[in-house]
Amino acid sequence: MASDSLTITDNRTDRTYTLPIEDGTVRAMDLRQIKTGPEDFGLMTYDPAFTNTASCRSGITFIDGERGILEYRGYPIEVLAEHCTFLEVAYLLLFGELPNETGLKNWVHEITYHTMLHETTKKFMGGFRYDAHPMTMLVSTVAALATVYPEAKNIHDPENRLLQIKRLIGKMPTIAAMSYRHNLGFPYIYPDNDLSYTENFMNMLWKMVGPKYVANPVLSRALDVLFILHADHEQNCSTNTMRSVGSSQADPYVATAAAAAALSGPLHGGANEEVLKMLDEIGSKQNVAAYIQKVKNGHEKLMGFGHRVYKNYDPRAKIIKWTADRVFEVTGRNPKLEIALELERIALEDEYFVKRKLYPNVDFYSGIIYQALGFKPAMFTALFAIPRTVGWLAQWQEMVVDAEQKIARPRQIYTGQRTRRFLPMEERQAAGAMKK
Ligand code: CMC
Image (cartoon, rainbow, N blue to C red; front, side):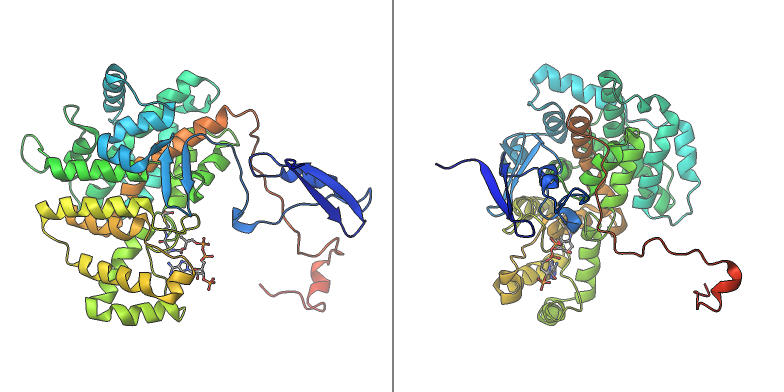
């Protein structure tokens, strides 16, 4: 009879163990009973980069990487991108259900009334060098919010947690917009509570001397859709960082800053900026084949391609391509699109990419839209951080109330030396000790 268990024979001892299988996993701690003798620590798994380790149970985001499926709380991403606003999706991710009309109205009001920054935070931002990278400013400023809201440390109080969640979602666009204007040398613009989340963000970015900023509805909707697509993606590098830092019961501001720092790397959220640099380097459609050859020779990576989980077309990339068409009707076609389409065409036919199941990911086309919307590449990763803050916070909240979670603390395989004799200074030269 089939049984949900795994039988292992340890060939070192000839002993056999039966471990329960639950949800397609065995518990790593169950392996510890497998020992060669009483002095043996017990068997561990070795999984650098967590390629095959589930670190939590989560009911937030479902991904089937083989089939290219992404769902938030059970709703397909395509449906949410078509019918919802970003704040509606944020509510869904955080609370598990779509809001009703009153619920959404209240939620939007609450987020809107948390968009202001304390004047000291504004001054703090004014202290950055004139050419500071917006993402670096964002990471530091989010951490600095912990000084303004010290009560955020009280993470076990659900009301207090929710207040900090609203503050972070509300303030993220303000911090990102101020980082952008700082970089351009423009004065900061205060939030306008009459506007929607994305319209207000656009206002804080681009308002000049006019009394009221009016966003193009097609462009503000496109940004809203991009925010929906980036809101969560289960246990990626930055979310894992959020959970890991949060597991020490650090406050949500410093944990979010750590997650944003993880996002900034070129293999994660920083990839969207790198894609634009790559397209600039390629320069024209005719140079694409030569560039692909360089990638295949191992001299370059095709930025915006490949994914740890998706071994099929990233469903977000499909929606982004569709959104790009709407944006280009307003802004005109970004000439880089030709190069990107040619890169995709060649890569999807090429044995190197086919064999490795490398498809365009979310970052491949997003930068092209961001550029058409008027953003400089240095701002792209901050645009990713704003919506992903919702995912980080939903995952953090889930972790805080999960009775099974403890402080994150992986094991290691120690490869260094043991119990050496200490050398006094006068003996080290003769023993050939390091000069530095
Ligand atoms: N260009 C060329 N070769 C690649 C690429 C790429 N973009 N991505 C993976 N490969 C190759 C890799 O060299 C390896 O080949 P081989 O088997 O011969 O050694 C094989 O494909 C498997 O790749 P891997 O590095 O083991 O895959 P991973 O799961 O560790 O890495 C990744 C995933 C996203 C870091 C990687 O695909 C990559 O560096 N992509 C480019 C950066 C990028 O677009 N990042 C954004 C990811 S999506 C959004 C987000 O997370 O922020």
